[in-house]
Amino acid sequence: MYTPADRSALRDALIARGRADARITGAALTGSAAVGAEDEWSDIDLAFGLAADADQSGTVADWTSTMYAEYGAIHHTDVWSGRTIYRVFLLDSTLQVDIAFAPREAFGALGPTFQLLFGSAVEQPARSTPKPVDLIGMGWLYALHARSSIARGKAWQAEYMISGVRDHVLMLMCLRHGVPHSEGRGLHLLPAATTSAVEPTLVGSLETAELRRAFRASVDVLLSEIAEVDPELAVRLTRTLRELTT
Image 1 (cartoon, rainbow, N blue to C red):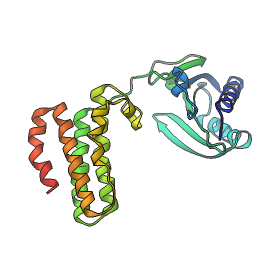
Image 2 (image 1 turned 60 degrees about the vertical axis):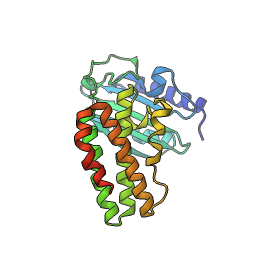
Image 3 (image 1 turned 30 degrees about the vertical axis):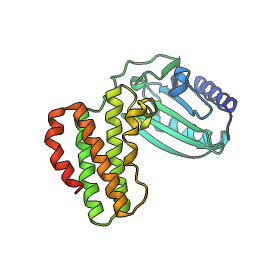
């Protein structure tokens, strides 16, 4: 297990290496460190802006080799956003290290967690927030598949679909209360009375009766949240969605 001191030392070393790499013209802290919100479980989040003539794939490959050879990486995975690659490393210490390699024109803040360390950033378009109506549509879509999964005796698929209904309800709640909606980051900020209404949607076993109970609860909270967004839509959907649970 790593310590906060270990994390800080590695981050400083990576930043220094970035300054010394001619292919990198800018660097920024991202994530919790950028806003002074780290705790003992926080990972390392860095973003590098590349020079105009830098080869992105070659730069990423070189840094990847270094992470394995010098810093204890045991595996990595990639997440793409536009032309920016986020290479996520798992170290043998259990520390996660996320390094974004962005073309110069894509290097800039995508949200509030961006602290420029050196170089210059380019203003980026704000990330779009999902529309409540789209989350509602995904909610009833998962509900349809939950109904058919239970009827077909596909217990694990039913659990997955019920969880999908719940996840979209929780995202709707996050949007309504103005807290981060992505990847559950704002769920702890929701009022207890709000999240307590969702607890009955948790599936306690794969028994058919339990799946049906949790499914009914998920439809109840979905309809309740739809009513917060669009009362008329909730009225139109109520009979049909409740029929799914009969």
